Amino acid sequence: MAAGSGPDPAAEAQPPPPIHHLPPDALHNVLLRLQLRDAVVCRPVSRLFHETLSPQLLALLPTLRLLLLRHPRPDGGGCLHAFDPARRTWLRLPFAHFLPYQSFSPVASSTSLLYLWVETSSSTSPLALPSTSSSSSSASAAAPAHPPKSLAVCNPFAGTYRLLPQLGSAWARHGTVLAGPGGTVLVLTELAALSYTPSGSGKWMKHPLSLPSKPRSPILASAAAAVFALCDVGTPWRSQWKLFSCPLAMLTGGWAPVERAAWGDVFEVLKRPRLLAGAGGRRVLMIGGLRSSFAMDAPCSTVLILRLDLATMEWDEAGRMPPNMYRCFTGLCEAASQGNAMPAAAAGGNNKVKVFGGDGKVWFAGKRVRGKLAMWEEDEMGSGGKWDWVDGVPGYGDGVYRGFVFDGGFTAIP
Amino acid sequence: MAAAADSSGDGGTSSGEKTIVLVSSDNSARFEVREAAALLSQTVRRMIDEAGADASGDGITLPDVDAKTLAKVLEYCNKHAPASSSSSAAEAAPPAEGEEDLERFDREFVRVDMGTLYSLVTAASYLKIEGLLNLTCQTIADMIKGKTPEQIRKTLGITSEFTPEEEDEVRRENAWAF
Image (tube, rainbow over all chains, first blue to last red):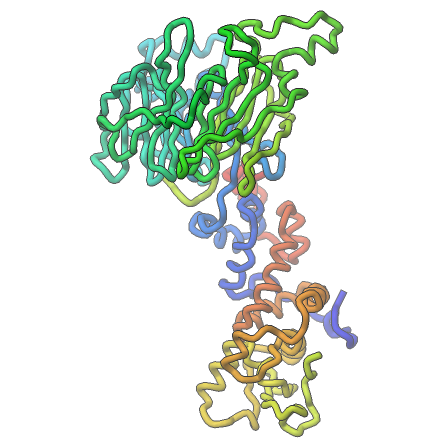
């Protein structure tokens, strides 16, 4: 309806000028106000929109925060599933049309870039193999038992990728990949760390690690430009966790324990703790089962999230899984609804809660929790966080999910 | 309430404030507005600076803005003009109207057909009126949000030159978004 106080029958007589007559700056002005997904949806609208919505323009839009799931099968399932926590929807990232490898496993991400292990043996014939139930074994029959792997860095939105220098398969099997700013990549194993910087020598640099034991759940805290990891300095009968860190600039010989007298027994209260990066890279989250007592085999009462502020070096409690949520992980919901007697709480590995995420977002998966994940999001401003369920997790069968945070966009192209 | 544009031809408002005459592209309409309102346009500001001595008697012709659009643009400028008329204060001073009142005005202002909206965007861009450009561009962006390509075409009055195969290809390359 026309605004204004006067009649405007003249407006009906002429067709509206098409959007193509807008000055280019004005069209940019409009499109830059969209969220990334809406902008990409505009690409097929017309040729003008497609040309205007170039990767260069899309790089100016804020990235899309996603949770990426890692498929439990080595062939990667052909596409990745990602959850958009803002819109509560699942997205599919198909890889087949630009990544010519059959087997891939995504392991890490930095802004708009995804890192995946791919098999790069020369006998790989992409996409043409018939898929039978034994295809994975017949495909590798001609290749060595452990074919060499490379880390590929790719931008799944832009559809481009690049391979990093090849590594022996042991690195892929045992190493944890961390992606840092500026394209820096680390691969950590028990005895050594590899680092790669695009602006450096273009080769992997090896750094011996002198940690007391295999580093557990290493993470990169971007604000501190350092790697943090847990090491078990206890006995085979009882774990005792200690925090270690290493500045990125000093990967050889830079590892040192991080401890403060005021911390007391903060590491004693958690069972099987994991580290995750807190929001903004300024905090480290430590998540584990809250022991109901200090006895060795005491069951856990819930999942606890502790947070270390890297500025003050103080721990505080960031969150605690609500009891009705935790019951689903221990199978007590199931047992109750089936009218069975309550199972013993410590039933071996079945109660294990898988923890993954990053940048202040934590997801929890468990064998007993089919088709959904529990989610905790750190409050930007406040001291707590929000708990919720995420439904509709795509069926990976019995596989328990792993994943990480991925900020998708066009800001970096490999 | 800010003084409305005074077109009685006495060359100024009752407070003696300077006015400027703006002329539409086809020379069909002349609008006399308060200087503070006219100076919301960086283009008009520049034209006045370049004209040097007081040339506002003849009026400033805006070759790219037709009468209908100019009238609508000036409706915006009059509403959003600062109370003070001195040109340096015009940028810093808040408008004479209250915040809420302006928001209501803006919402009603953009309830127009697409043709008028496009004309307003083009005029705001040419005249360099920041507030109007933001308002109109945001309005179009809000119309796009959450829609499918087909719905976007319908809303914005676009026909696609893509063949069905070409469109499929673009969708496939960006499959994650669909």
